[in-house]
Length: 448
Image 1 (cartoon, rainbow, N blue to C red):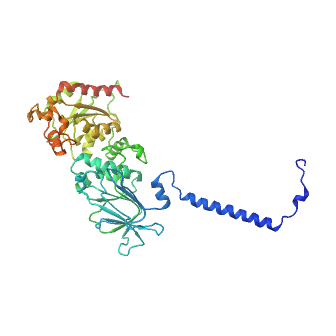
Image 2 (image 1 turned 30 degrees about the vertical axis):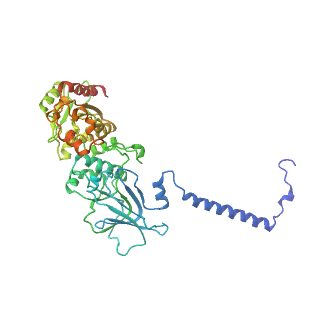
Image 3 (image 1 turned 45 degrees about the vertical axis):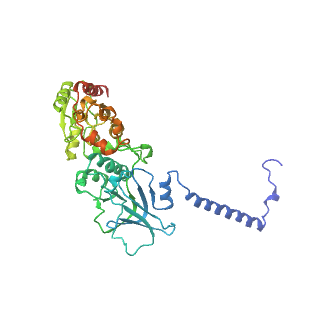
């Protein structure tokens, strides 16, 4: 048959059965599509388990696998009873509740340390059906809640203030853009006052003391505990962070908290630059002290530094500005080096490592964090002639012959800390140390 020619016999009316069959096929296709659509809505999204939880409203979810911190999240009708140390999640009927659907955690980011955990109250999150008559909402909140503790070693050690509370709180709360309500257990008024600007920067709402508040607070989203992407202290792992946070982001945030103006250190390549780089020497009061501060001061001035000598200051607004005005931060291993977060980007940190094969401590706590903050890091390990331990122990003692035998893995923490961290002071060999100060100057002459 030629193309374009139509057989008139094909245009005659279709029988009734034809149209019934066609309608059946249409209905089959329609219901198949509807079924597939509903099935697809239950599939786990690419975002991972947390996105799946939000998608199918399976609440709550708790991650207990991190050795630093447990964390639970719940979306829906969550009621928080402070004095009762409980959080009740009123589950919809669609969720299958089992008898053991409850979690008790200590919302403090140092889970592995039994000593710190003894100072933190546990909080229980429990699933229930319906609306318990004895737990009516007294205050309904429109923003998410974050429940955590300030106990443990925070408030007793400056370094732990950061690694156990401030860093993990930044990781967990910063994504909310200030729209989050803090409920704080084991609250220390002195701690809160010291870091009040930090808390205000993360939340626009007055915090609630979890321990003494017997009101029923109700939220649609609650995070119990703090997130730690890194198992190492004072560090973050951007690959595990939903927002790719690093310690560089944290340092920038800390500088914004205290409105610190200096973003970069002195540039000695600038022909019009007449200002000397400023060196801060942090001295310690009780242990690991510099025994010859005047000698170190004279050396630094001879090399070409303006020098600031300080023991630190509890007024962070004031002290952070002093640190930020400096280009180099120098000190013996200890919590005061935590102040590196206030240095301008590309500043220099010089850590003086005490005697006793303490390189592993130096690296874990400050070497890697400094690099992550985009700071230049120099490390000076003293020799046995520079430690005052020579005045306490003979040269044939294990302190000098085999320091590793006194480390925690071979002895115990008490022995290790008593000898190398508490009994030891430093008498710096200025001739041996001089190249390190010169190296720092060279860095400022090379960088853009």
